[in-house]
Length: 75
Image 1 (cartoon, rainbow, N blue to C red):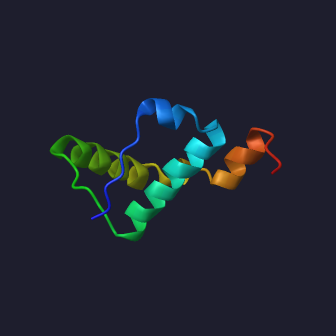
Image 2 (image 1 turned 120 degrees about the vertical axis):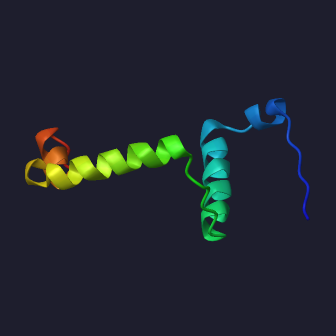
């Protein structure tokens, strides 16, 4: 196992974009390995409530494209 240790001072020497890229690269390795943390009971309850609301209110839902348009986002 590879062991790497970085102090917060060492990490702060990186530019913000370098730190962001490091975080992204680390996250990508976690996602690639298929890590899926278990939901807590509270998280599961919240997710189920949101899904129930979505099912009930699907007629009032708006697409992401529609929301971006309404905010004047053109990119």
